[in-house]
Image (cartoon, rainbow, N blue to C red; front, side, top):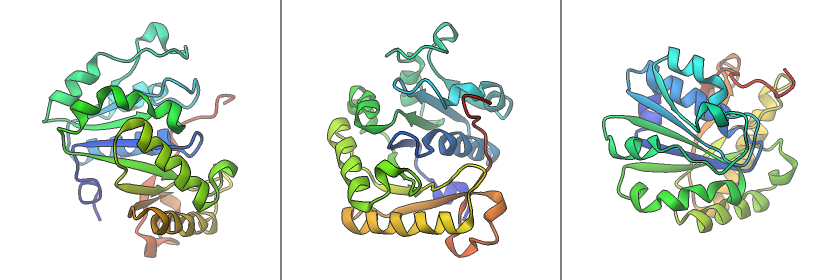
Length: 224
């Protein structure tokens, strides 16, 4: 399945618990859309976590033709509630495919409530990232609880789950399959379908039955 078949909506909003890999997934999705020939913008709306922000990969994204929308360069290393004015242009320009990288948990997702009246007028999808390797959300019940809290805060309904289970460089195919099982259980509890299983390209053959969305590790750890 191609990236355009898998993600047909103009706007893709990526949410989830802190540390589930939302930013890694968002960056890879934006790059894949650009590679497919789409005019693409990635909005870094994480105003909670000072690390693992998509704006850290500005050069990579812009070299690939992805427009990065983020806080000003003067605030690039600050953890402040400053939102980019360019986001309004992204919401209004229907010739651009947008990926919105949202902060973790309900507190981080709260930023979407501000833009809800505009978002609901567009062709959008709200995705919730599942990661079975995160202790805080490794049970389906807890993961579903966080998902529903995000929906309540944002006023938007989640319409797809993304299994992005990983242990960084120590990830195995079995880890991803465990995440797939968790995502299916969350789907059963919530009625929300699994949109995709994200996995590094090196797992493509081992997980071909899952038809994974191929990714490369783009985000560095804060100490690297």
